[in-house]
Length: 322
Image: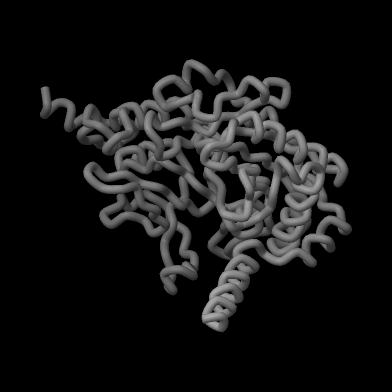
């Protein structure tokens, strides 16, 4: 029986250890991940195609880890994109998920999270213009999900005031993603507009929402994270997340947001719970960014950079006071 299981194949991909636990403490088998990817291949591939993949992988006995470079020993039919990694200071070859076969192969690699940029890539031109932006709503550790929902409604108002609409999905962790398809703007302008929209969201109710990048400065409020737009990445809809039970980033309608459960859909029940392609149905057509929003955003410092400089300033002040 074990030999037969080892030879199981789909679409020319051989699988191993399917009935073993996927990773320590996750509580699901590798087969559950495979079945999820197979069931959602027709919906996942269009979200991934043409976009260099950043995966979070699991190995038994080890912590989850991020992988951008294609794993060694990948089949020659796995397409890749040669991109520059600022962190590694070298060129890496990121997987391009163009078909079901590649997605199933990733399941065998225990790739449990699928993150892509808001732009497509081509050999001739590299990365194209941004196709979207996201407001990532992150609650404090002990914060109720109802506060995230309240912040999502503030963000929806801020977007509407700027002439924009968004689709919303759970992150698969504790928060929500508000995704706005866009066109006609540079990466820098999209990133700037996202900062402005985050600031406008927090300004609507500073007691509920904040753009403070440093956790200690958030005061128990929901963090409106603007840093994933521009050249950042996002976990696509229907992607699992590396949490116990492997919850899935699931589309939510604005009408059903109050009843949403941020981790209520998992790889074991997503196929039964999600009919059709609600994410494709919910996404509005690509929109143009308002020039005033972009200009406002360019006056707002990048959150990570501002936090880094403030940290340095405080350390210098502390040393001077010694």
